[in-house]
Length: 262
Picture 1 (tube, rainbow, N blue to C red):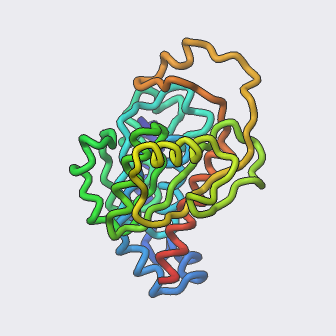
Picture 2: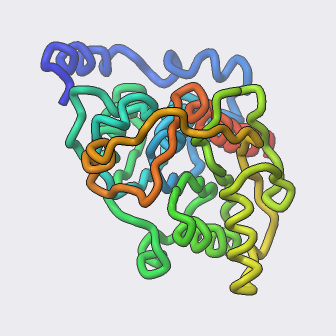
């Protein structure tokens, strides 16, 4: 939890800051009508780790009010290097709860729905994806990521997807392109192979954030590092905040640009 003095100060500041003050610079750039459109859009983010957490931050700071964040995990010490809400004070907390608390200190008027759940084929119907304007895919699991992409592309919502952000160091190599044009990314390649093997393909095109850089892990992975997390991955690769954050902010930027230019 946040220290009491910080929470007391934040609560007092809530009554002082209004929407017109918080988003004054946004409105100067985008215009009043665009800000009103942003405030009405409904966005859901699947996965609020190193990429998804920064995407959520970027969306709320840009004027998105109606945001749903989905993740089943809890904060562990190895998240602190790259995940927005992960600090020494939040280790052990449910990720979506810690992130929601953070987001509400930015805009107390935002409607943040925090779901400690996993997206799978079995749980897909519970998320009512048709009720959203934008779906953000920041899922790590290949199977679940593929299932989300297939379903999201059948809805009216715009889908934006993150490819792999691990084993990267050069932020200038981060790009946006249509899924089938992503090059040099093992996750995108694995997804395409999975779609081809199953003969199930996304019903429409969608944009991805990716990097064609692929480094090797230089350090040794201690078993204890993985054991800290509630839902450890089968394979753990090195990652760093300036890459995951850029991925997340680019996803947020895609939403903002699309919503304000509509």
